[in-house]
Structures are given as structure tokens and as C-alpha cells.
Length: 159
Image (cartoon, rainbow, N blue to C red; front, side, top):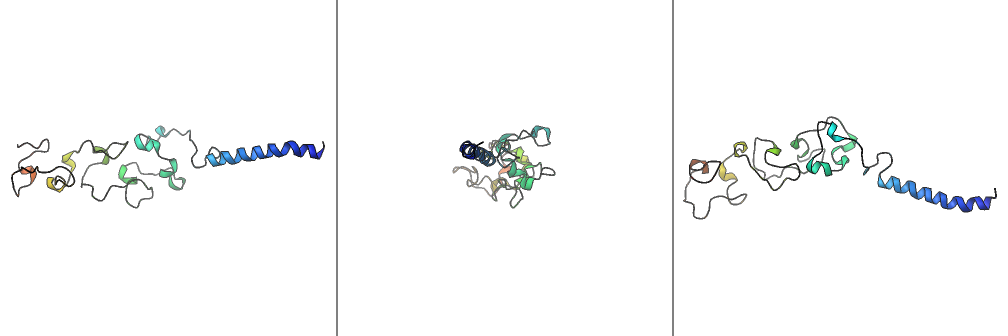
């Protein structure tokens, strides 16, 4: 074969193959590169991906390609200074003894649709102070008593 003819058709083929390989590497479709679409069925684990977790990049939870021994509770990942850089509980969050999913949904942290007041620690007025959430209306009687002296956790009307 004539060397001039061989180089004429191999140069474009070589360029094409180089561009193809580089684009596949860049898109993450070869060798499990970051951004690759995985065929792994997360439902087969003890942590099925639902809500916001289904949209998270694998590497955001599997830091350093760690796949076993990861936390399964919200506060195992959603904590200040944790290995997994998930949204942490804000400093102004009310003090509770319950689990995150008692008030929050797995799709988004807010809005909070329900607060189980039996799980809240502290006084009513620590939250119901018109700064965090609604508190006494302007026409409320002046009293030094705590809210639960007159009200129940089911409604604000008197007992």
C-alpha cells in the first residue's frame, strides 16, 4: 500500500477515534467515571433512593468511593462538619427528641407540613414567639404563664 494513501484515510479515522474516546471519557460513560449513569439498583440496599436522594449524585454520598457502612438516618449525613456534605440542620432549629421524618418530607426540608408537639423539647413560647412562628396575637391577655397553662397542643382555644 502506498504510504501517502494510507495516511490520507487514517488521519481522519484517527482523529475521529480520538475525539470519540475523549468525549466518552468526558461524559463519564466509560469505566464508571464521575457522572456515569449507573445500572445499580439502590432499592436492593437498606437505603432505597426516594425524594431528593434520587436526584443526588452518587459521589455526594459515596465520598471516596465508600459503599458500605454509610449512615442510614438523616442526622448521620445531615450534620455540621460531617464527611458527607449534606444540608445540615440549621443552628436555629427547634430542639426535638424525634426523627427528622417526623416533621420533614424526604423530597425537601421545607415547608414543614406537620410538627408533632409531643416531640418538641422546651416551652411553647420558645417557638411561638412571633419570630419563629406565630405566637400570641396582639389582643391576647397579658400573662406570665406559659402557653400550655391554658392551651392544648391540638389547638389554641382554651382547654
